[in-house]
Length: 114
Image 1 (cartoon, rainbow, N blue to C red):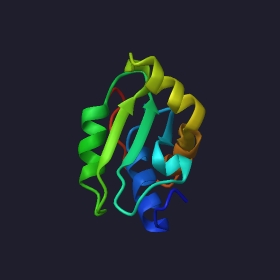
Image 2: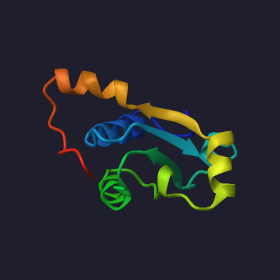
Image 3: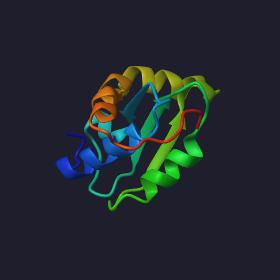
């Protein structure tokens, strides 16, 4: 999926689960379109009440993956063309509902509020 290994996908989802305020995350760009190259970055847009993109980007960059991340807070986007692209091409990769399982399993999460 998206040209990424199962391990990489799981690591990204685990990272997103650490932010209970994130409602959803979408992969967009070349990886969503299926025309990515081997070293293409991972374009990730997310929705949350507050913009925690700096913290999230740092957490994703610290994952043991060879990829760079382009992290975008959807609600903060002013570029209408990019927002339309995310709406059209973006694939929902994570939804907060999947976070409930992590809470039940006792995983630690960050405090709400980016």
